[in-house]
Every structure is written in structure tokens, then in C-alpha cells.
Length: 220
Image 1 (cartoon, rainbow, N blue to C red):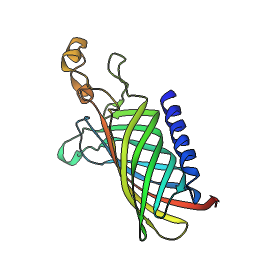
Image 2 (cartoon, helix red, strand yellow):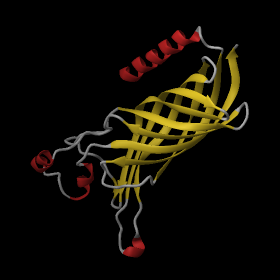
Image 3 (spheres, helix red, strand yellow):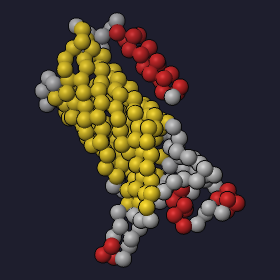
Image 4 (cartoon, rainbow, N blue to C red):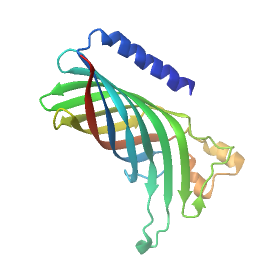
């Protein structure tokens, strides 16, 4: 957890440095859904649904410019549903849950807000399942990393003073699980069957939609 602690300290430092320029600091809550996939698992498509919820604080800088700090619980992963009518019983579910901390730059244009910035997520839970039941990665294989570091970008529509609709696309910059070489798999005799899907570095990609409720300014 040391990495995310250092990241939060950095964010707080940014907040303090901008605070003297801020016209106001707004706070609120957010909740929404995400559709995600993982490159490297052998399955394409944003088929894994998840939830997002948390809170945010936003520094309002000069006109139209903002910096927003968030802490959210975010569910990501990958899913492949069987096509039994076609004789295809292949099923796969990977669920990775994170406490995620984005730091977002925002720019207002009329009723829209365009935004982008980095995020870091700390892994709090992982779950694997296929058509044969729950899967546990053998200790000899690379495990899922404790952190997901990436970037997010999107736009929001301000319905009124308090309610905001947000759409974002996010992608990992570092792998959430390292590549497993074929030579190493062969040496471990783990290269066949269901373990083939783990013979790749994995990166999150996800699209999210959320509603934000802004309470108002903490200070003027």
C-alpha cells in the first residue's frame, strides 16, 4: 500500500499548492457502471459489467479550469459467456476490484466538461472462474499485481448545479499481470488447458458511465 499512500500525498500536495488560487472547493459523491475487458486474456469485448461508487473533491481554479480528486471502488475484469446453442461451452470470468484514486484535469465548455488525468488503483479482491468452476492461479505463475496504474479521459454534461453525467474511457499503462513466457510454462508443465489464457501480460480497458451529485462549495 506504500505506493498508493505516496500517490495520495502527492495529490494532497497538488491540492495545497492550488488552494491559494482556488475560487472554491466543491465536494460530492458519484456512482455508476463500467463495461470492461482485459487485453492479454484471449477474449475481446467489453463484456464484464461492474459498479463504481465513491466521492470527489474539486478545486475550481481560474474560469473554466478545475482539478478533481476522487476515491472510488471500481470493479473491472473480463467475461466470456458460453454459446451453448452453437455447442460452445467455454465460459470465463475474471473479476478484479480496486480502490481507485484518479486525479483529473477538467475544462468547461458551455454545459460540457472535458477531462483527463492519471489514476492509480489498489487491488482489494480477485476472482477467477471458468466452465469447470473457480480457478486459483498456481504460485509458480505470475500473480495479479497489487496496483493498476493508468490514464482516463472523457466528458461530462452538467444537467444543473448539482447533477452531472460523466462518460470516461480508461486504460492501464502498466500490466496488471506480467507476461508468462512459453519456455517457463513448458518447464513448469503448466502450458496446457485452461492455463493458456494466462500466458500474456494483461492490461485493463474499460468504459464507464456515472452520475455525480455535487453538494456545493466547502469554502468560497
